[in-house]
Length: 170
Image (tube, rainbow, N blue to C red; front, side, top):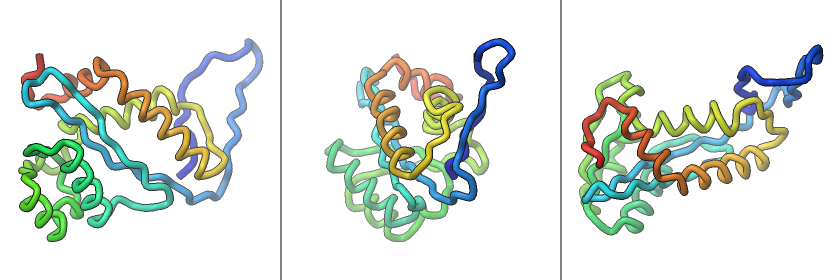
């Protein structure tokens, strides 16, 4: 949905800010991502893929994990939620073939998932009070801010530290 997340803002005294948005739009962009910690725990990277006008499903998870496995070229310990497409036969088969070892979070525990902190930051900071007028603008701007976050390793590290999971970061 292309409705903005409205936050409190500063504006000229006596003038109410107007936030224009496109009504009745069902366009959306889904995102799939992974926060990766190096084996020696000294580097953190964010990998993500935008899916304009599409949903995260087993085929998209399969593609994302295949690209991630090629990019990292090492065994992967994957901690993720219990979304049905994460447990699809096609995805499980890929994980067995490319040395991905999944560990599922407890049900209904988004506070444990560090990637949820990335989405929260993205929505509450660079994308707050912004109403895109079309899907292309939404995708381009979201990709730009996602890449900006990728370059900020201290911020990525903070997402991991904010999670109650014990990852023992330096």
